[in-house]
Image (tube, rainbow, N blue to C red):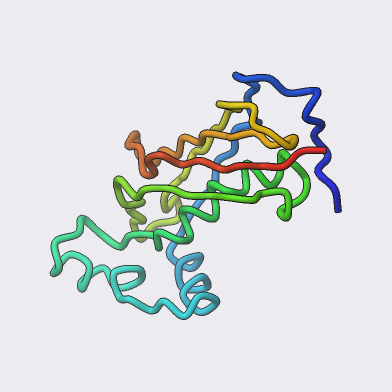
Length: 142
């Protein structure tokens, strides 16, 4: 599958469509099963509070993956992402209610690189706080 976005059609400042990703406790339990990360801070409120967290928190890698979806949905080919990194700045706190949490992600092209590649900078926010820092993806375009 080739990237659906053409290098010729983007410039520095091109905005990717923003997305919001709801997260409820059952999502975290399913992710724990898929990832093998059963740390109780991701599903047991009592334990999470005992270790000093405000509540259950989403897995960092889950948060990172949801943010990457903004890039992969935009480019149309997950294989076009040649590099991706983030710093975890704040946890995504997931209360035990029907609403859960919401991860809001936006991105924009920050640099045009060689070989039809671009750097996309992402912003991920939950409950008004930036949850990822230095979130960057390098994407090879058509």
